[in-house]
Amino acid sequence: MSTSLTSTRFSVLDRSRIRAGRSPAEALRETVDFARRAEELGYHRFWVAEHHGVPGVAGSAPTVLAAAVASATRRIRVGTGGVMLPNHQPLVVAEQFGVLESLFPGRIDMGLGRSVGFTDGVRRALGRGKDEAEDFGGQLAELLGWFGGGSPTGVRARPGEGMDIPAFVLATGAGALTAAEAGLPLVIGDFRSRDRLLAAVERYRGAFRPSARHPEPYVMVAGTVAVAAGTEEARRLLVPEAWAAAHARTRGSFPPLSPAAEIDGLSMSTKERELYESGLRGQLYGTEEEVAERLEVLLKETGAQEVLVTTSTYDRAALHESYRRLARVAGLGEPAVDPA
Image (cartoon, rainbow, N blue to C red; front, side):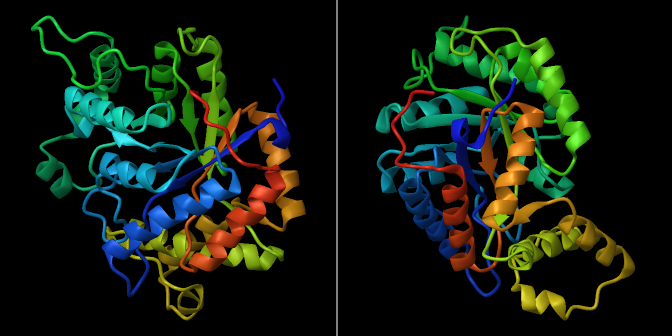
């Protein structure tokens, strides 16, 4: 299978990252504004994420935020990347998406993941543990069943029952097989772990069971893409996220994004420096010409039908410019409303 930039959909996942000195409320409003810009640029989907108790992320209630995004836009598909199914009862998730689809028919996507809370405290607060993630396949089947017609007890998802809302599985490793067995599209990242990425995609395609909506496998690769006028300028966009990730892995909390210039002056421990520099290596960034070339290679290797871009940085204007340049690289135009 081979694909090219001109035949590939490009979409956006925004995590509602909080910037240093700003509030969660501002981050959420920035997400809604960003969705409008993504629609104008021609991106196919705009998804929001689920994180709990994270100092640097405001996106804790993805279906609520998706409703705000859908209200502020007209054509772009809106969804979640994703709702973490082990954190919720499947009936509640079905009802929430039933409400979204009722209000915004034909525009809603249901991206679903298997992660649980990042810390023991968050898991206790949610009333969920790591064991719930082990039954992701069963939870997914139950959720899809609510759309098909209820349960033996006579309970029905209202709204929800009878609706055909596109579902996607966010997965790595064995999770790719869950998507394959359910006959659902696979969303997988990141670009840097190329061997692991390709192995998971191969397992998914090899085990795929055709479904009514998806007779063929559908792969969406997710990751950071930064585009600027110069290579180093594009690389600088990655600095705030790379430092936040290094901070989280050494100190246990994911902080708000700081300006790149401030991070340059930080005194890092050996471990922090190692993780920070690792976060910058292998990312997909550069000028429009460089990014186009690297994307073509990625698409040829994976055969992916869609790219979900997850870039975050402190400078919002530079972030928007990066997505504008990427839209030009991908040849995006006005999106058409599309049930897939």
